[in-house]
Amino acid sequence: MASYNVNLHEVVYSLSNALDLVGVSHIHHGKRVAYMATEVGKQLGWNGPMMDDLFQSAILHDIGVSKTQVHKHLAELEWELEKDHCIVGHDLLQGCSLLSHLSGNILYHHSHWEVLERLELDDSTKLIANCIYLVDRVDVQTLREMAGGQDILLGKDRIWEMVRKNSGDWFYPGLVEAFMEVSKSDAFWFRLEREHVNGYLSTWLSHSGEKAVSFTELKKVVEIFSYVVDAKSSFTKEHSEGVAMLAHHLGREFALSEESCELLELAGLLHDIGKLRVPDELLEKTGSLSETEYCVMHRHSFDTYDILKNIRGMEQVATWAAQHHERVDGSGYPYMSGEHEISIEARILAVADVFQALAQRRPYREALPPEKILKILQLEADSGKLDRVVVAKVEKNLQHCWETSLLMK
Image (cartoon, rainbow, N blue to C red; front, side, top):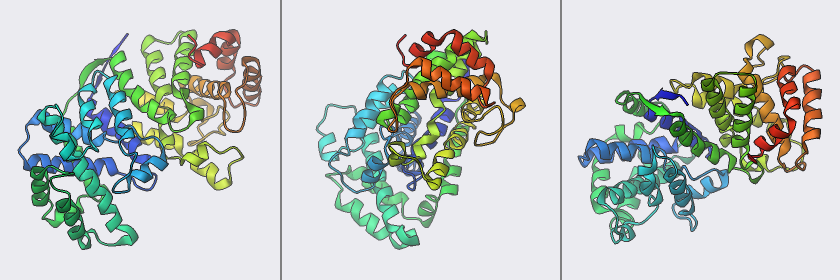
């Protein structure tokens, strides 16, 4: 099992782009929250490790949100079910050794200060969680003030009023005082714009370096995001993991190196991460998609590449994952790549994706048995779309492929 040199901050930052897509139109919420939280922490003079935990927790605070409808509710100032995603996020991070230390911050990031201060928690968890809660609510109020194209500076007084009104019960007064101080300048609000907040956050990446992590550790981080993708629809539960395991198995059948098989598995786990931008109702639709809806679905593999492309050390994963809808005859998307532009790994992933999808129930059909799946794959190979050699490997190991894709082994 290989080890991989990665910048964990870079991985978290890039994959957080996927979380930002869940809002569909409310994009970059996580990054704005991270920016504002960091400014507050700096104002309070928090030390380096605490600032690092604050930043990572802030950018991942909505890791428990998969569905666009949930995200819409969280754009309300208060919602009775708002803590559900905190529990999901906490549980996801708890299972990942590289990020488990952030789980408490995520669990309590919608807890009122009057509740937090009575809990038996360390002070850093209380302060980080409540800092995220404060600026999260500020961002929600900010977007309301900017609705209709209004300049944010015209609404900041109402935002300050909301913060002051909830000081002591929702928010720790010391955090409120620090926020009021850092938000005095116009520049604080201007930096919430997309290009400025991205530039601000990129400086955080420059202060961190690469480190060697095992495949198991890296996979645990990736699995968090594949879970978020698959949880978006009840029909896609465990789809990404099934594709990943089948792709790994087929890679071994082709005698690819162990490293290539591991990277194929990561690509399988991440291949649909761009689907977080797709509205829930499209994934749950029982009938045919309209032309407009089809176009919306078509961009998910491009969004997958856009999310993954900047993670150094995972360039191949980004390419293979983005090509899972490319076809050998050039009829696929999003690049319409030709035969000589699609690697064997990308061809394996494409077959694994089709196989696993057919093996699962969908809103428009029932799950298919292995024999019917093979016939469909062979028809696709005969028409020049899927790779014949990869499909032949599936035929040779049909029962094993079927069981692997459904995580039965």
